[in-house]
Amino acid sequence: MATTTPTEMERKAGIWVTIWGVLLIIAGIIAIMQPAVAALGFSLVLAWIFVFAGVVQGVYAFQQRNQTGLAWKLLAAIATLVLGVIMLSNPIASIATLALVIGAFIFASGISSVMLGMRLKGQKGSGWVLFDGALSIVLALLIAMGWPENSIAFIGILVGICLISGGMWRIILGRALRADAAAT
Image (cartoon, rainbow, N blue to C red):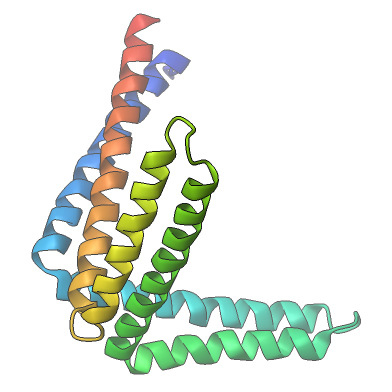
């Protein structure tokens, strides 16, 4: 039986990581081209994650029933499970809600960046912090102005961008792994 050296394992890992990165980029491009499909898929996957998490929380609560807080643990499990079921039963409303929550997060992040930028005023790089904050606020306002009509496109494109970004870093990592293996 042949044994695989660490260098050979690193080279193979680099190849598979690179392939995975390319597939993610292809999926990201498809998601951007078909944002409704990507948004629906994301919403359904997230809904099933909540359903699964609710069931797991419920099982955990019953396993820990002799400890304090059983009612709270069960309540959290039921709430998580119900959220997942609601998301499954109305995925379009889920997409709109996700867009609103993301928009609110981007707005809050923008406000905090502007405040930080003003606090750092005069220091090197403070202008970039202000720019980032202002850009985030404008993006959040655009999301709010287009809500809920543009929610599907927003979530689908965001999913595509995340897939492409994840694919890019995997390709870079894969190349680095293969280069390290070749150098050894």
